[in-house]
Length: 213
Image (cartoon, rainbow, N blue to C red; front, side, top):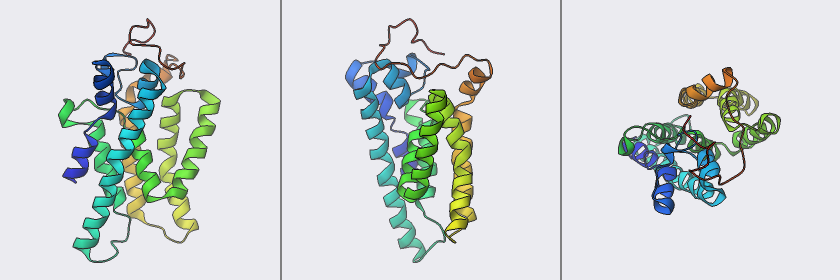
């Protein structure tokens, strides 16, 4: 758990912004240390590097936790231990001790975890997210809708495949609650009609419209 949390706390958006621009991404745009804000502020390359960093820190945590569970439990624990690892990676990402507990919103690392533990569920969620994005063009709405949908998808797929696990459903609920909580500011802006859609890439930190919200 501590290793997963520590890996999650290595925020790739903060690292990429500092290495490439000697800047703190949390001072710009939405103030979020995530790929969407990197895309708006610094462009596609910075966003892709951020995404890659989230993949690189999540997959080893999932793999290591699976090995440890097999070694300790000596058998099938009744659920994929990758869910357990991913939960702590998300916690570390949202509340990183290395960065004063001010991290990202956990969407990408949660998505990478779902991809690792249940590719079919990831495919369903990806199709759903694309459909929501085509309708609203707003990443926060995509994240919120996907977070709300994840437990439903895990529940239904478990029944359909006759491999239902309440533990995995519970983990998916925890993921959803973490993502929803981290987007509470976005929820306020959506309710006030102030949330902005995803705009063109690389507007730059000095763009007048790219100020902390």
